[in-house]
Image 1 (cartoon, rainbow, N blue to C red):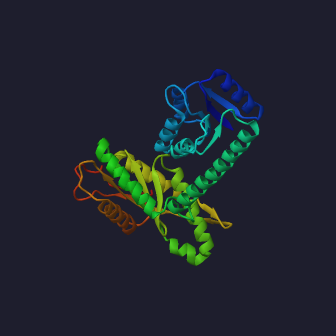
Image 2: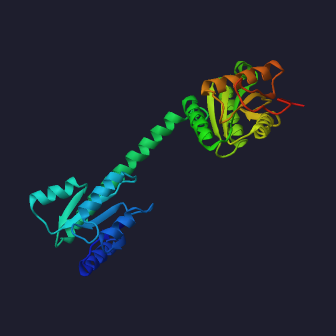
Image 3: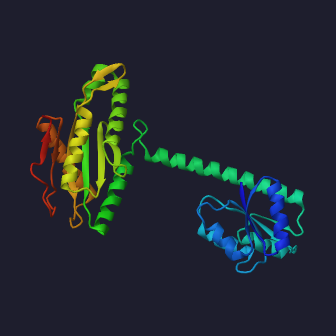
Length: 319
């Protein structure tokens, strides 16, 4: 564990540094408050800090306040080192954001115990953050496929529409539906159907760019958001996804299944006054057209209010 120490007295700083090194800590040593604040602002800043109360630049309590106001993760556990022993002074130090204090000249055993307490607090805090992130991930992900769930992919689409307006760039949207998926469940069972959905999610994720958004929209439908993707890009991506499904059988549950998908795509342009729901409705209309035309094909359609046309032809089908 790395520990930052900030002490303007050279001899005291040296004693503290040697003590911590002997206990196995990695030490970042600072001679004043400004240097300490600079070190604590770095991305890999130590999570344990021992700050002298009185220092040039910033005092220990001032640094505590600034660290707490920044409220950055991971948490920084701060121990104030002070020669003050009055009750009011100690309360002031703790109210500034310090987690603990130790008086000078410090007792090595007491310092060791207080540092171990800090380590336990940091471990507990790390576990809480990990649990919180796991819950957040669960709330954002579809349990079966691991893709973003419906709410998350729609939120991503709304954010990309807002960014498109700021950056004057288009956003493409693809709505995908597995063809005759009900027959898979009826003929092979729901467990095989679940495996098909998982494999579909894997192929879909592998067919788009790393920064594209992919989510399970519902049932056997998937939604893909393609930031900065123009009409030519949309047609190419949609056809690439279609081929990723149709060209190679799905090997699931000991069976080789020929699974295809129909896709409907549309574009959002920065000048278009089109809501997220209208954009999805347009993609859904295109998807319905692809299914009506025979399935296993891509169809692109533009919303009524778009300012730029999609390219011709607007349909690509399996040859």
